[in-house]
Each structure stands twice: as C-alpha cells, then as structure tokens.
Length: 400
Image 1: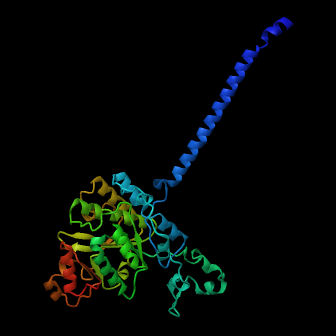
Image 2: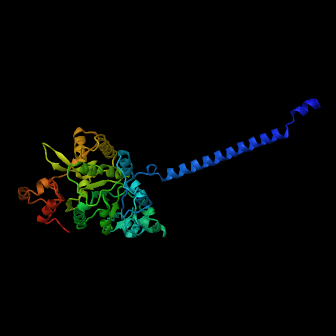
Image 3: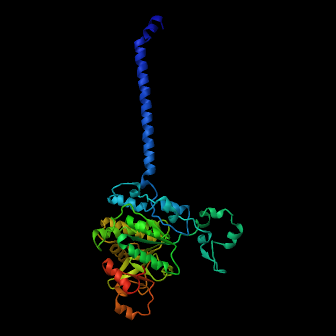
C-alpha cells in the first residue's frame, strides 16, 4: 500500500474522539444493565423466600411427649394449608395485613416454652415393659447398655422413629370458650388421657384464654372471627366456620397423624381410643338412626391411610365446588352413601357408648338404658348456648 493511501485511512482527531465517546457510552450502558439485572434477581430471591405460598403447608400440632425438630418445624408453619386455601377462596386477611395473617402464627417469645417443651427422659418413653410395667423406648437392653450419655440432649435421637401419637383436634371461639373448658376438664378426669390436644382458636380472645392449659397446643388461623361472634346454626357464617374442619384434618393426616376430631359441646367419660383399634379408615358417631341414617362429623376418628386422605381431599373439593353452601356434615354423609372412595372402610360407633343428644337427654331413653355407661356424650340436637349449658348442669356434666 502506498503512503498516500495509508494516510487517507488515518482518523482525524475529531473522529477519534467521537468513536472513543461512543465506546465509553456503550460500556456505561452495559454496566447499568448488569446492575439492574442483579437487583431484579435479588428482589425475586427475597420474595421467593418470604412468600407464604412457597413454603411448606402443614397444620401444626404439639406433642408434649414426642418433641423433636420435626415438631418445631410443624409448629412454625402453622395451618399454612388453610391460609393458602382462604387466599384462593377470596377470604380477606385482617386489616393490619401483618405476617401472621398470611399464615405465620405469632407466638410470643415468652410463650414458646409452653408450646415447645423439652421432654423429661421418662416422658420420652413409649412402650410398656412387660416385666416391670415401666415405660421404655424400643428394646430396653439396647437402650440401657449402648446408649450414648449425650443422647438425651437431642430428643430426635430417641423419638424420631416412633410413630406419631394421634392428635385430638377441636375448633372453638370465645362464645363456646366455657364449653371448651368443660370439655378439657372432662378429659383431665380420665385415667388415660390423650398425648396431643390441638385447638384451633378462631378468635384472639380464645387464643389468650387457653394459655392456662399448657397441655393444649393453640393454633391461630389466618382469618379470625371478631370477638364474641355468635354463630347461628345453619347460617352462611356457621357453614364457613365448620367447613374449615376438613382442611385442618387433612393437614394432620398428610403428616401421618391419626386425627380424633371432637366438637367441644361434648364430655368424655372414658378413654375412647380402645374403640378405634380395628381395621377401619374412619370411625364415626351416629347422629340419627336408620332409615334416615345421619353420621356426625363432630366426632370422628380419621386414620392416616391413603383411603382416608383421598376421602378428605374429595370432601374439601366438594365443599369448594358447592361454594360452602352445604355444611361439611351433609357433604360427608352424601359421600359415604355414594361410596365416593370405594376402598374406604368406615365403622359406625356403638350408639350406647357414643351417645348423641337426640337420645341421652331424652328421659325415657335413659330409663330404658340404665345399664349404659357412655364413653362420650354429645350435647347436640338442640340450638342455643345457654340451653346446652342447662342440659349438662341438670345431669351433672357441667364441671367448671
């Protein structure tokens, strides 16, 4: 190439400066895009961690005996499944919109020792020893000879492989707080008491009032009722209240807990659990005899089998499809009559052991059944709080 043609390719100082400026502008834009991208990723990552719908969804329970890291995790993610359903169903949160309303239960730090207690060694033991009658964990010879001296410092080492105890589950509000106390007192009087009692408190006042029962695990739902809200039977508000029960039950079943659901307008006169040992998925109280048989959703034992879980899932779906216009008990009876889950095996409890209010509070029935020793009494078949109290008082079943 000649010197002349080479000279023509040289850039003038002005062109050089223009190109340098464009390069600097391009590099600056690249840096800005990079920073914006990093910021977006950081924000998305934080919301992913905090969003309640992306976390585990389980209803909590507290086993005063079977305390473990798993129990702590369950308690920390209280009734998340219910909160997600409420959000999908359009149920609004409380006005303050805080984290508790999105499924994060607010448990004050000073209350935690009552909800999550480290068990004493004797409380961790499970099986009765045939020789001495003393409780033990698994094989006593292995536990006594080869046990690590630091083993009891971590409860998971002794209880993690033990099948969870059944959970006694109830829901209540401040209007029926006195019935709840009466029900708990009837359980306290039993020789053999359940290991786990979980109560879903549908308003703040009830949550605080039940603090006096350290053996009870209290749960706050995301959407709570106003204080002293009276629910009239068969109204839309009443149906919305009772139709939460299947969701609470399902969350425990999916965590492999059998669930003994009980209404609180009841008294327990004996241990009901020996009546749930046969090979059935569901044990349920009879509310009305044949030919118009009605079974009571207010007292039922759900075994954590696949058939039971499928049944409760379909129970919930049907309530949602019906927009909760029918109460859960009506839908449950329809499903059992239709054999919605054909492999589900259910057993109707002995009506003279598990007695409904239709019969027991009938003086003629009691005269004809003087030899009957009920295990459970249900103060139903009557509407109204005060008249229910009077019925219990009249027959000596009001303990508070």
